[in-house]
Every structure is written in structure tokens, then in C-alpha cells.
Image (cartoon, rainbow, N blue to C red; front, side, top):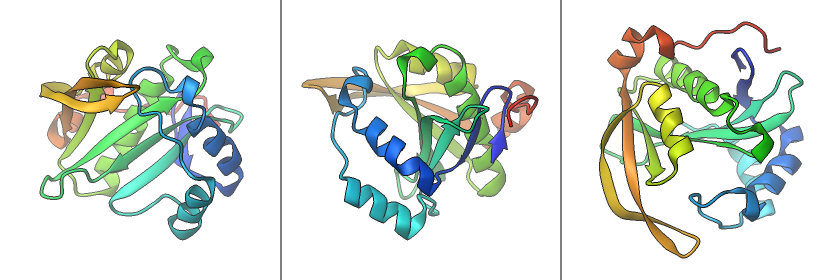
Length: 186
């Protein structure tokens, strides 16, 4: 488990599965920008049983509050085979938990984990144009806007331009604000 000030991230536990599949499939809560595609519960459970959602090319982690209750997910995956990079993402499930810095803290913890555990040079976040909250999270965590992929994502009947943000290992290492603190969770 990686502990922050207000939240922690940890590997998904079997006890999380019911809540996670329910939250992932709550299409009204995904907002305007994430795809609204249901996941199969048997497929979700089978993937967990096979890998625990931890492989060298794809991982999911629970975002938990101090009571170890799951409040969101963060993930990483190898999106471009020839890039020395992982694409990463984050989602806080309940609207009442958004805007409190939990996604930023989870992103900082995930960056710490990935840069310390893997020999990877880049972390990338792709954010739909107009998703101001998610763009602020990326910027707050030291990610730099590198470009726009025009009409690259489809969600809820609309095509979205996607902004690509990236954080290099050397930028992360030089930026003390990116280093998460562990003070009160747990």
C-alpha cells in the first residue's frame, strides 16, 4: 500500500470486487467524458482471479480512504508498444468525493510507484478537451501538455479531442512537489 495524507492506493482485493464492478457499471456516474460501456462481471472476476489486475503491461489499483473503503480507481497500461511509457488514469466514484484532491494525491502516489518499480521514462495522461477537472489534476501533478489528438475518443454519442499530458522521470525526480507525503492515512 502507498499511503498519502488523505488517501492511499493499493492493489485490488477480492473483497473490493463487488463494489468495484458496481461502481464501474454505474453509467450515470462516469461523467461526460469516460466511455459508458458495461463490463462483464464474470470477465471482471476472471481477470482478477488470473492476474489480480497486476501485470507488467496493465494494472488497476484501488483508491481508499483512511477506513480502507474504496473511493476510486487508478490504473496504468502500455498503450503504445514502442514508447518507453505507461498511460495512466484515475477515477473517483462518488461526486461528493470529487474536488477534494483525492485524484491528485492518487496520481502522485501512482507516479511514485511506477517510477520506482519500473524502468519507464514517461507517464502519460490523456484527457478529453473540456474535462477541466481532470486537466487540473494532471497539471497540478506536474504533467505537461504535449499536444491534442483530434476527435480521438468517442463517448455518449460525441467525438472528443484528447489532450495528451506527459511527465518524464527526470521531471518527476526534480520536482519535490510531485513527491507524495505520507502523514495521516492508515
